[in-house]
Image 1: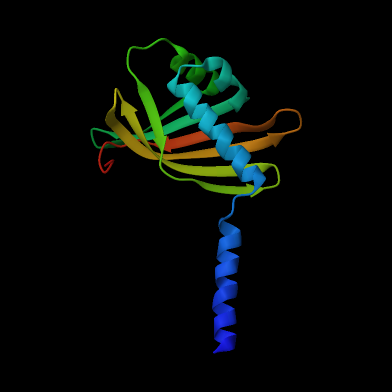
Image 2 (image 1 turned 120 degrees about the vertical axis):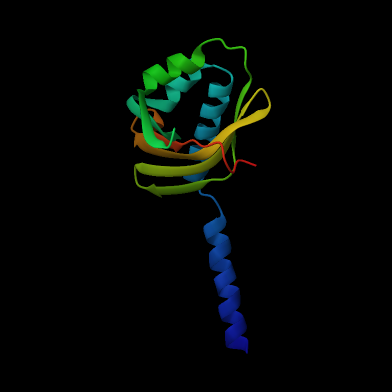
Length: 152
């Protein structure tokens, strides 16, 4: 019985230690959070610091039963979301999965997007980031899904 209890307690200790975020994970989460705050507030000068110069963004969606993809550069994305708008945007992140291997990080975030306080759509964001020598972590690639069903 003592061996069984020790085994169970050691398993809980391993799970608990794995659940604790590392400082790198916290830094990545803070950077992505800042990116969304800047996007929601149309703050292009902050968004520019989040992306590598040649970053690509893609969105997967279905229109009229046909699977589609929309591709844009980070520069065009920043210009678009920095324009003045009448609507209130808020992208709510509903969880985080972060994987790091050296200078590569992958972040998976389920989200719900609100337009003027009403749910517009939801999906998953997948970020690929690299750690630069001078500027820290930069987003190099984003792909997300976008749907209107199951967003409650």
